[in-house]
Length: 91
Image (cartoon, rainbow, N blue to C red; front, side, top):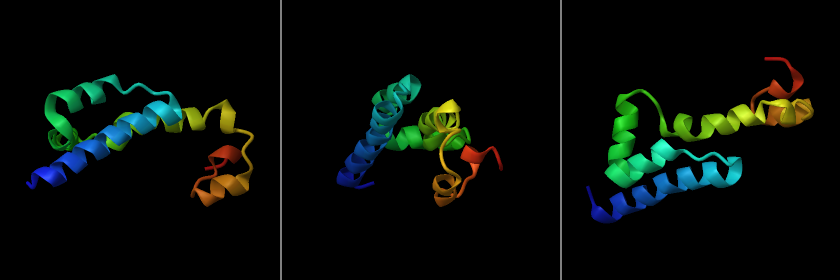
């Protein structure tokens, strides 16, 4: 693989970690450890082989937090824009 492209992918994978940390206050410690040990591409391959996406590893806790009490008062129209009605108690 092109080294420049691989470096950009490494950066993108690190951005996934940083977004989870900054936006959701979620420290995806194992994901970060994998990035340091294997870099982005191999981490993605490992996670894909285990049938766990990087998104699930880092963003599911954020989604869980959003579905908690904090969002039960979100108007249904806001949830509908996202393709969900979780804020209304409906599914």
